[in-house]
Image (cartoon, rainbow, N blue to C red):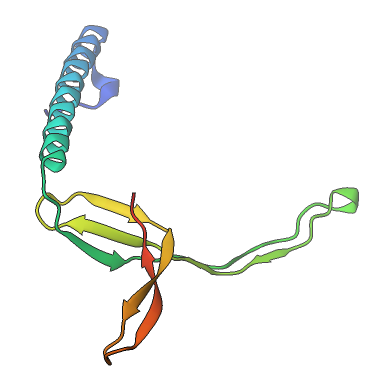
Length: 125
């Protein structure tokens, strides 16, 4: 839809264009809702085959400068960088994604017979 600059429109043209946009947006929202429902049905019927990836979130450190004066003085604060451990699993068939930060410790057999190691594995709901 080609639109003219809004300032050059008459009141009637502006009302017509607004009504047209309202109808178009309502149609797009309805189509989006239908597509989301179709995707949800497809994903709920899927026999998921998950691919799990470690996807940490990295937060860069920053500094909050001092402000105020007298009794309202706030000293400068350094906020250090942080990494939040996170895992994402994606179904290879329907592309459904789940994200978690929870883990549990499990015993896994080692490469040498009779050995084992305790490892953290992600827990998805």
